[in-house]
Length: 409
Ligand SMILES: Nc1ncnc2c1ncn2[C@@H]1O[C@H](COP(=O)(O)OP(=O)(O)OP(=O)(O)O)[C@@H](O)[C@H]1O
Image (tube, rainbow, N blue to C red; front, side):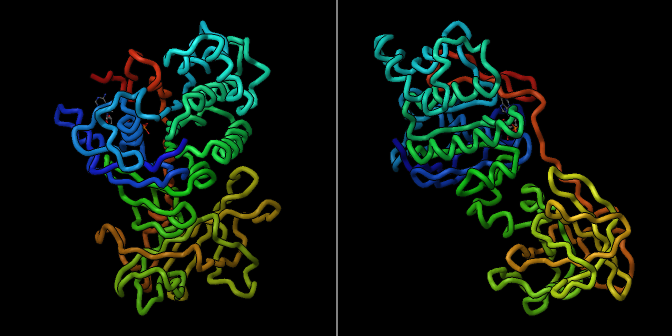
């Protein structure tokens, strides 16, 4: 019940002079692994899932399961199930009949289909709700039933399109735990689309970053956040710290001072932007041993159980740079306080500047306009209109309405 998924040069155009929704996508997802697709709204994530599911036909390229092309197969014969942000259960069927649906479509009797469906409801801990109608369930319960229905089709590949987005934090964490358990038992290959970096980091083995229909980077989930290939990827992954400077002999020099780069960060000598994840920055007392820099707290903001700090560091020459950090629960800092900053080498990387006009090396003896540029407010988009897709196992179901209000063809 698992398959290696590969997409090759996958492309989809919608015409009308629009840029391709997906342009030359190449991805390999090993059998049983989980890939997270992330990227801004309109970057082609849902299109990629729909092409894999067979809900749309690619204009170019191929989709392969265990090395065999499935593009000529209808959705219901691909061994792929998709779960959407909205559960899309049949309101007139009880929970068990909803989960039994794919077996019924395949020709099983109602009794046999219900018997086969029951264990999947148990798996999602909804075994006690078999006779309820979807309208009698909470949103989280409905989503569990939708997941059970997708799994009951025994997919080799499970596609989750922002399937946990509408749930509250506690419920989302429950669903994450459930997905871990389901993966251990059923081992489907999973591709999930999410705007939530914590979700991608928690669930995925690898993360692919899309922008404008193109793949910018695909890498190990444990590394891509600390080794983004570019400033753009860093921003798309929610990274907030970008410190312009220069690299000389494996050392980054900036208003922060001199930082030795990890040996696996291969950046040539010259202008380079230092990237460091805000959650990896360690905030200490100003004179704590081992601090890489010291600065003044400019802002403190609640970030769940943690605090997000903005710290201004001024070099001896007067160059200023802002560093974003997240403190551990229990650490208390106030505006105006002097603090030390430690930048663990495992979380530090450097990439060439993308825009020579705005990413000037900042080692000169002057204050910069960085105060206005550095504190990035990265947008973690959340679509205004929830996905209203169809299931591949629902023949004749209507195409979804996309987020821009127009219908598919
Ligand atoms: N049926 C359609 N007709 C025309 N254009 C479409 C259609 N479906 C999608 N698009 C366009 O294709 C591009 C990619 O859309 P897609 O839904 O794949 O993006 P996404 O990354 O999933 O976005 P979001 O995060 O908002 O869900 C967008 O520019 C979108 O407007």
